[in-house]
Length: 122
Length: 252
Image (cartoon, rainbow over all chains, first blue to last red; front, side, top):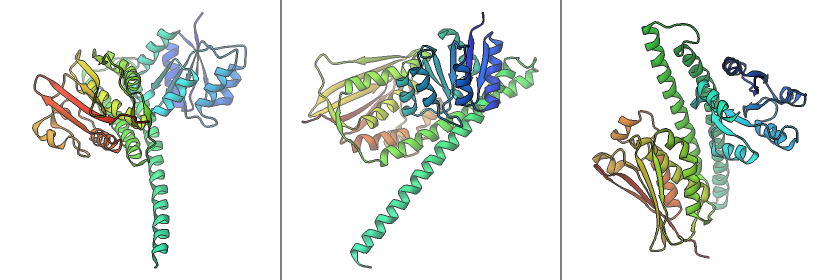
């Protein structure tokens, strides 16, 4: 069975490109534009094998989502890659503190490199 | 206007300037994020074309798209430099909170942060720790981290592939001295007198990395001096470049 990835990204164009690439790599892909959509998926019976998380979202920031994921017994073991264009040290430190598998600055990576990273992690 | 009124007016003007500066900083940060988002999309789309995901390309199309991809990457680097300059100007101007810092630990952590980047270029970073315990220093941890990051980043950027970087630590006359030695680009004769000037970029460094703000070494010199230390370098042909800086030992 294909592994499932949840992409939490509010830019629909970037989200579309990420989803297209990961589907091509053989993953099942779910998408959310904000925290409400993300938790609608995460609170259902379908749990993703990995979460790709943007940090600047229209409702709450990605750190809040990450914190809630790590506090939830049913979700806390899901690996999370922060995939954002924020790159300040304080953001990286904050995300690491909350527990992530990697912090990738979107503009510094190609989608192939993102797919390679996911392959290593799940 | 009496002296008290003058001081009050100056204080008000100062507050206004601080607010304006903070707004400028926020605008730069937010705009950079938005520009990066657009550049990321462009990067991924061009890569899809180059990988043939959207059909075969003619030789001319491929050559032009490669140029577009490289140009886009240069723009991404420029935005990163802009963000760095924005952040470091903040650092220079901020009031300093001094505390006891274990430099050995700080260097270990900073080396770890750059290990991925060094690995990708086949560069080995060697921290040659002294046999005896080094005293803690008195300084601002966040700012000294910026100094170490900048020196390591430059050492990686300007080292030859598969080169080595040596980091040492020792005590001299009430100061702890750190050195970062690379085996890469040698600073030009002109650069030897100008390397710490704001916006100056050494011609030898420009040959290796076209994009750069020329603000990194200027910033870290200010930081080291604000931490009551000194910074200097030695650069010799066939030897590479070594940057040294000192920070006073913490006295309880």
